[in-house]
Length: 92
Image (tube, rainbow, N blue to C red; front, side):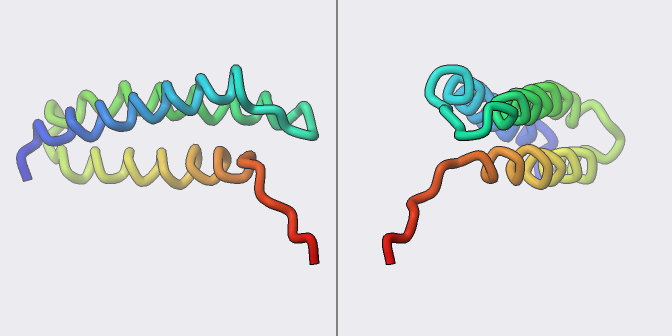
């Protein structure tokens, strides 16, 4: 895999981080106000780790570095952000 491919992954991740951060600031209205702070933290970590992902082609093992960083973004920020997404309530 071409190491510069990680720049494309970082670009997609950056767009997602900005979109989720914007939603968290303007559209996210949780029942528990502390979730807003958790959402902000997860979105900030996502953005910082996306910036670190830009350095993947400069490392000695770019695929391992980029893969681990991407997995970390999905595992941490993804699960935290998913937990804050409002879900439909069952009526039955």
